[in-house]
Amino acid sequence: MSEEKAEKFLELFNKGKEFTEELLRENQRLRYRVAALETESQSTGSAEEVQRLRAEVNQLADENRRLQARFQEVEEENKDFAHRYIEIEEQNNNLANLYVASYQLHSTLDFKEVIQIVQEIIINLVGAESFAILLLDEKTNELKTIASEGGDVMPNVESISARLGDGVLGSVAKTGESYYINQDVDGGKVTLEKPLAAVPLKIKEHVIGLIAIYKLLQQKDSFSAVDYELFSLLAAHAATAIFSSKLYSQSERKLNTIQSFLDLLTTSG
Amino acid sequence: MPLENANFLVVEDSPTMRQLISFSLKRFKNARIIEAVDGVDALKKLSGPDKIDLILTDINMPVMDGLKLVSLVRQNAQLKSIPIIIITTEGAEEDRERGLALGANAYISKPIQSSHLIKTISELLAV
Image (cartoon, rainbow over all chains, first blue to last red; front, side):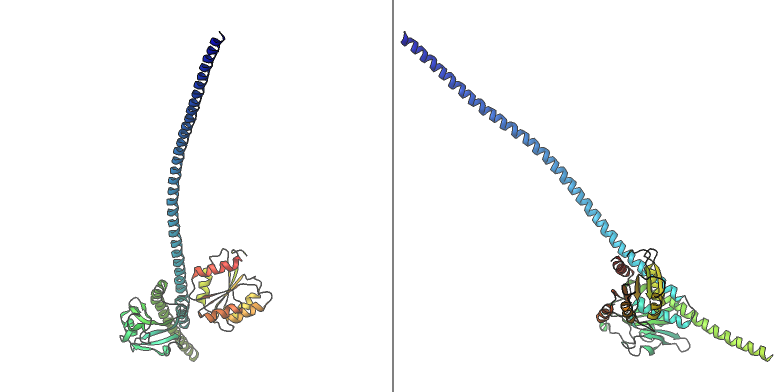
């Protein structure tokens, strides 16, 4: 009896053991399953996040590209404005030079003062160290220096004379066309007969003289754009100013002579 | 010192250059420009009632040249702090060094560029 009970107990124990083992296996399986599900769930979540973040990164990259493009556009505009500002500054400077030159040339009717002003313009505004102003004697058709500067660097600049049509100076006076030395010919060697530049002084097409430039100031390498504008201005305005002042001084002299004659007549009468 | 309401003394024997420099100085708001034809005339203007904020002087002038003027201004207790700019046709390096050694604050060779002159003045008066 007790042996039977013991077998039954052993059988029951074994069943319990099997059940317990079964339970443990199930438990382990479930734990694996839970762990797997947890991993699956986590990986699914980060992929979404990554996707979202990627979209955001793309959006930011687009924005960055757009801003960079705009920045470059603005930078280009800025460069353009800076360039235009420099151009306007230069124009302003040139206009100031031309205005002052023109104003000064017509500020007097005194022949000596007019010549002095032409000289000041050539020295201070053009930047010439050696030059000569020549007037044409219409009776002899000869050009002669009436004022000059820089005899120390260009000897005899004060006593240049040239016949109308002869050489560079004579041709400029005859044709009324400006002359600029060609640096490629003869190495651009400057002589009294072949200056750096020769600018006719013209009233319409009538040449009354010329300005011959032989040497620029040490700090000036070559003529600038405004110099050519100044030459054009001098060609016309200096010519009229010189011509007017000459006529004025002649008429003054005549007036004085007539006045003296009248005074003499009045006194003797 | 502010760039507005400044009093400038322009010392030049050439009326053309005086007018050109004065023209450039008008870029400064309410600038007052006093002109002198040589160094002696400049000293007279400097001893007058107007307080001068900056002197612009040529070198080659009759009666008293610009270098002598710079030297005398620097020796004068009341005037020595006034900034001086030399504007001249003398472009050699030794001329520049001589002018600066005598006490000029800046040296500009002719022909002048208005923008360069304005920039130099702005730097000197902004200190």
